[in-house]
Amino acid sequence: MTVTEIPAALGRRALAIFATLGHSAGFFVGLVRSTPSGLRRFYLTIAQVHAIGDRSLSIIAASGAAVGLVLALQGYNILSRYGQAESLGLMVALSLARELGPVLTALLFAGRAGTSLTAEIGLMKAGEQLAAMEMMAVDPRIRVLAPRFVAGIISMPLLGAIFSMVGILAAYVVGVVMIGIDSGQFWSQMQDGVDVIKDVGNGVVKTVVFGIATSFIALYIGYESKATPEGVALATTQTVVVSSLSVLFLDFILTALMFSKP
Image (cartoon, rainbow, N blue to C red; front, side, top):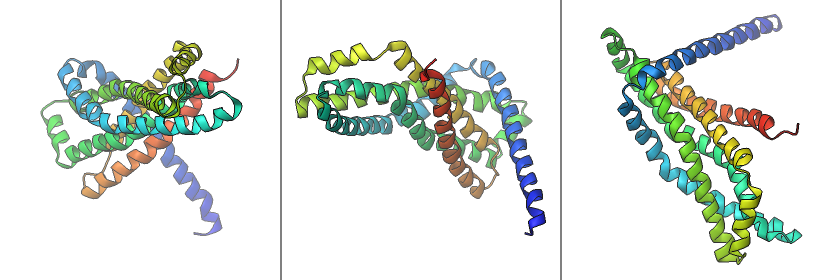
């Protein structure tokens, strides 16, 4: 490629990116419009909550426990230097409720449930099941995509709450049972310092936004994947990469809006 061809190549790349963004935006609008019709068969949504939410519970709980244990050990090491070891529960609760709970849950959800959704939709496309639905005048967005989209939005806040709860209990085991911090101070400082609306509520809002983003990305990439084994494999990889970057970017935006000083 010569120097004179670089601007043209960059222009074509920029146009391709904007075209993809426009197409995905139209797809998202169509998916949202199809959601009310998809909810008429709510049993499909319940089945998907079990498939992508309940089956992600083990990795969410295990990761929450591991994060809580590490936070407690590192937090005690830092707080004890300043004579504030009793604030361990408050530090762990704020860290999990505000940031680590929603973000890590979304990343784990994208890696476990998001790839599953993408592969499932991609295989349905490769097997021409989606085309067969369209031939029978059944909209795949209503029958297939909408229940999975709603299930992802429902599952993410529940999984985020479980992640934070398990993490706090793991920190209690380390801080109170193993190290010997007073149990009353552990819980009382947490109750006094954690605001239900500002801390817990904003964390729930984050999980809802992450649930919308990761579910949509997984469904969109699966629906637009090439109907080949290589295409499905590439789509699952793209789901993890795009979802993870989107979660991190959205977390920065939401944190700046929620916790910035007026």
